[in-house]
Length: 327
Image (cartoon, rainbow, N blue to C red; front, side, top):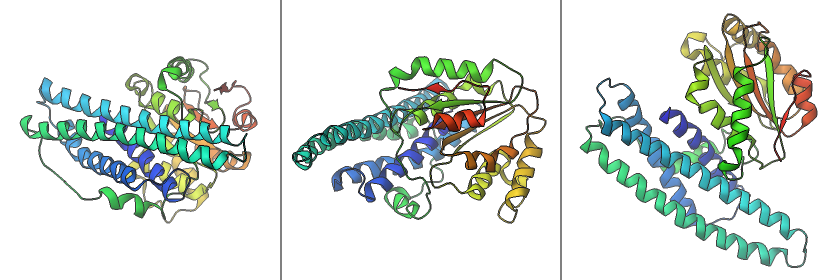
């Protein structure tokens, strides 16, 4: 559980750093260094989490160590989301006063960056304290790498996603989480597409992640996977990623398979299973058409959780399901 939280957060941090490099949020070298340090430390912590998970004799102190790390990951997630959400809100207000826009934004961005910088410093202190405790608890020093700051730069050429996913405070999504979770667990036996619809920055991705990471939800399915789609959709990449997350190395050589073969491989694997697939940020009808054949329509309660900005896309994916709209 803790490792999944860290992995999803590392994906988000890489996105933030990429967006920052592209000039889509204020450039602050010290702030960037702080965020890169957190990314590097969390990446190293993954090794220790795996070490803990492999131990059957972990005592209460070790479990508390993992819980503390998970809590820091959640707090970091919320801090970054709050920062970008506030930034977007400020930019929208600035548009109303064209003449003053650039002055207002520069002052507003400075305040936001300083606030985020202070918050990240506190996160660094907490991570350092957690790191210092690992030797006390006998958590092995395995697999320490030095990916840290250079990691995000290498991802600039790899990542296909074009927008940062932001959200309001998670407290406002508590009821939404319950509603979506209920739709995924209960309801019709047919394969249903449960959609979350809303404008950019409203919290669709965060909601999907919170639902996906709930441990009790996993008890109701045989397998699950979370994949990002985005506006720069490439069916082959999505299918390959989906296949690897579902089957790992046992699925064969995904690199050589055609799109049709990939759909058949995934569909065959899922056919006898109750599955949960999250497709985050789907943009149009054609993208759904390229993927849907991979999801067999067995009457076993399988679910697809879809996030999109467009209600018509949600209804196209499943006209019998009412989209859950965030506002």
